[in-house]
Length: 414
Image 1: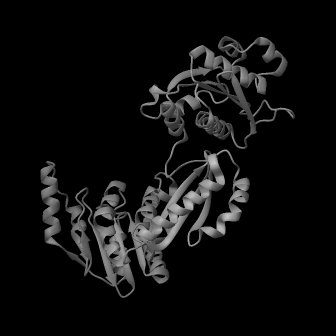
Image 2: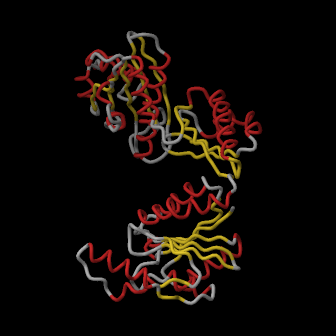
Image 3: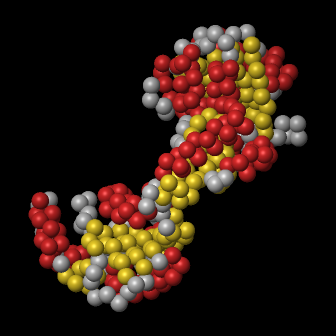
């Protein structure tokens, strides 16, 4: 079942309001087998609304709109759609009485302007909205189906969950659109694609999409219009196949957070973690402490941004003078000093050049050195990240967490 989404509101086009409704609808409706094939945003203009709905009906015969159902002059969706479909608006006394009672409970008097919210296109099904004053509407006619929902996210989401999804599931005959997100990091998108190429054809009937971001590249596997039990089985089998190919570049699925994975790995072993940060300026520690319960694993750390503080941490001056703050030797010394200073099972260190200035031909902007110290052993990694200052720091933070996660998982007892 294909459908189009039309979000209505000039504020969306001006950028004052983010269109979170479309993201919610794409995910929520997929579980019913409904596939959003196009999303359109239009201003508070009746001709624009009517045109977008008409074009959507011509393509899919199913359109869902959000916004424009309130009592103000710019709330014109209902009237525009009713005129498009040739349906008169009819006043529903029961809706008016319910609105009056709702306002009375809040100690407020209902304005005459609200009468428009009790008007319904002839033949439309009213979707009662307990969270607001504007009900949703479902019109089924010769041209197709139009679902009109309020634009307030909480109201829209409630109506989708309680009114729209049950009706769509009844039409889907058990067919769903379901996805599995596999989170990868520590490998560029091009290299990831090369690793995946031998197995991509074996993933059918699933489709595979690459979703690069600051934390790595997410892989989205999608089952289209399969029975629920088949979709789950296909996704589970494909997920295991991908893990087998990518190994520890995969750190979780769905909304998994690598910082949480580090803490879980440390907790499983009874280990503690400390960090020493330079170019990331505390971002590694922030990611770890953002996870509830992190204090049983994460001891803390130090933002050793200047050379003087690196010395205070325990990095020998001779190393800083001979190799510089951004070097393998300094990163190694930072990790070793952090582990010894705070008695952690494992300590990570990160130092680099975040830019936009400060780079040289030998040490370009984006160069970051990482180190992890466990016992008397220290391992290091060198990476050059692209992007702005913030993007380099964010990518370096993710890599530092990945290095800690791998070290904890692969090492023996502390």
